[in-house]
Image (cartoon, rainbow, N blue to C red):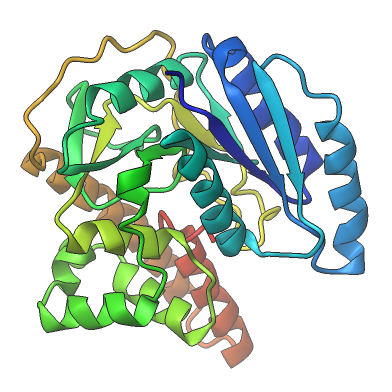
Length: 316
């Protein structure tokens, strides 16, 4: 059975058009059920853009079925995704999740569906991911990493039931088990800090809780060696992201013939990711050092941008 697609949109019509058109160009689009979750406006300023997006949604074609859910109030992206994913997997048993700033390769749906079918009955696999960072080292065609991710992904009902929404519980277990460094890719990432920000209410990130839920259970996510997803929303247009090109990738131009691999974390891929994280974070630290002596307000703004540019934090 072809997995349904859950697409989450808010107030960015230009991004939504690109996302929808790319999905329509996928090989399996005509066989896919599309669920679009349109969040309600948070402010009067956002209302006009939300209306533009909703007008656009009425013109969608190119999928087996199209189901549009227009929220009457503003859920915020975290609640919108948690509720929407839960609704779709409860009905269909599996789901492919896309947000309104993800442009996909024409072979994205094929890869996701093949992988969801291939690993559906493997309890150690919690999800399938479509994006991979632009690392310098060559990666295997597919590989596993511990945890879960958020830029074009898919999962099953039994896996999504492992999602723990309480960030305090997740942080407490990480600390009790002494896993903060491993959770942060040996200190090259700020995921523990992101979780603390979510608990404090400074961030409404669902993604760091999804990652932590999977990580603490020792579950694995499958990644491709070449990316099937490009994030085009890191251009100041998103609620929780700032402008950066550090995560830009070349999209896959050919389909991936999936073969089942050993279900264990790829140690070399993990090191490669950590090296990439360390390199991208170091460049941001250098930027801050150049501005030594600026006002406290500027420091706060810059520190916020540092967190925003860390992979995963740009996803609310």
